Image 1 (cartoon, helix red, strand yellow):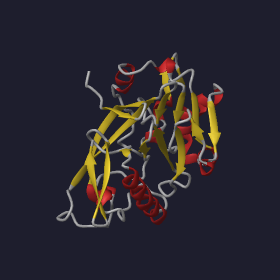
Image 2 (cartoon, helix red, strand yellow):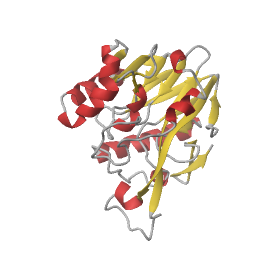
Image 3 (cartoon, one colour):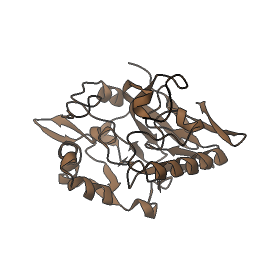
Amino acid sequence: MTKMPHFRVGECEIFKVLEQEVPIPTATLYPNQFTDDVQPQSVTLSMHSWIVRTPDTLIVIDTATGNQRERPGSPMFHQLNTPYAERLIGIIDPQQVDIVLMTHLHGDHVGWNTHWQNDAWRPMFPHARYICSAAGLARWQQDPARAAIVADSLTPVIESGQLETIDVDSRPQFAGLLRYEPTPGHSHDHASIILHSAGEYALFSGDLLHNEIQISQPQLASRFCENTQQAQRQRSRMLNWAADRQALWFSSHFAGSSAGYIVRENNQFRWQSA
């Protein structure tokens, strides 16, 4: 089994669980923003989860896409068959997960909330509290285009009584060490998650950034962002925040280790992989 990246922040251990890595043309990810002779012609997007083991609590942050999902409009996510579950079980026992935190409700962040078992979608983490934005859930439930995601990835944990909704703007805290930080733009209620343990900081950035290119060029807008100007403001704000605190940045879509530090040099930022 492939060894997954492993990190420590304060008293917490953090593990990456890879689902898949997919190449995408740079001009597709950041349309109409530069020419291919200036930037790489393609980049690789990673889909994965982060596992946080605090001294007292086992937490999953975002749950990737999930296998066997009907996503005909999204070829990257349609009818996957990846070894995510085997990789996850190689690190933790899903029965022991206490909390699942979702940065936002896009399909590649909520899929492994559930798995197909006994002819039905059932919670992947049967004893966990699942946490998501109340506003985001209400919006998805009213959007016919999101019906499949709601049906296979959210409704089963609602029906099991495990889903709890929050107002991300209130910056709720979990396990005494993690709190939501509103970073809207990618979606209207997108949030990042801050970890502060034993004087050290980490940021689980959700979809603030899709590739390292945006660190030196935070003005670049991903095609997946709903409000590009708002997303740019939040990127710049959190890049400064992370650089000021030497926070370990855990990305949702960078390939490789997917984690690193934001280094500020001459009023610009660069990525230092961890």
